Length: 261
Image (cartoon, rainbow, N blue to C red; front, side, top):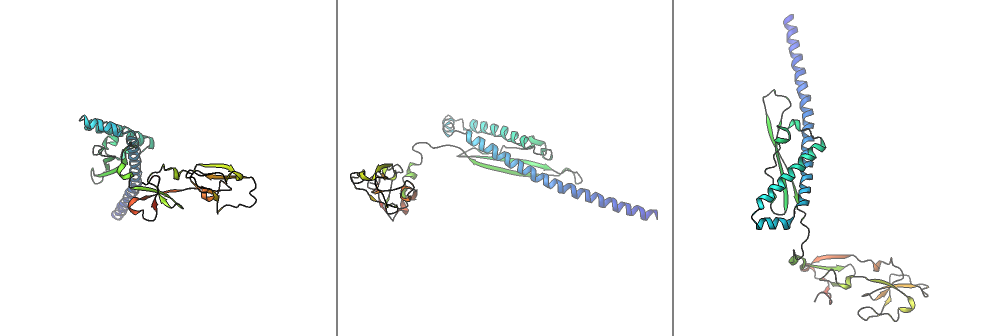
């Protein structure tokens, strides 16, 4: 009788132990997700900050002076400080990481070319040691483009492959600053329409989209290079959207005589 009771107690004890271990691993799984999310956010934060602070011109000067490695080292140190600061701010449960914050390595990060690529390598440890000191390796990374800005003369060849046009325009423009793309709206009285001329010497005719009933001596609106006068500033013909197209695909319209050559 005592032996049977002892076996039953042992089975109950084993079931309870297995259940407790199962619940611990379930909670650990959610902690793991929390840690990975925290590390990912910290990498993104540090990557964006370092990318914003990186100067291409300074990088070129350092490369010329043979100091590229020093520049990368400074970027790594800065990224490390920002990364740890963000982890602390998020209250990331780093106690599940082997050696805590010190156990997260960013040494495999890369700052070459136009990108800041941060790579975090660390090991997670199990919350209980039933199977010994088991750890597993995790690698997370974030890649951000350096905020290099725009330098005059950069990508000039690529810019020359673009042409500009409007929805109802009949020509392509080689320059976004072409005066034909600038509406330059001004108001005149209706009685001045007959004597007014556009920049090309042409006359103004009534807009087909405007309501011209009872014009009288009211104000109308014209543009420097247009050939229509409008009754309202909200006329659809006075709204202009400028589109871009590759020169190789620009086959439907002729080139602007002013900027297209």
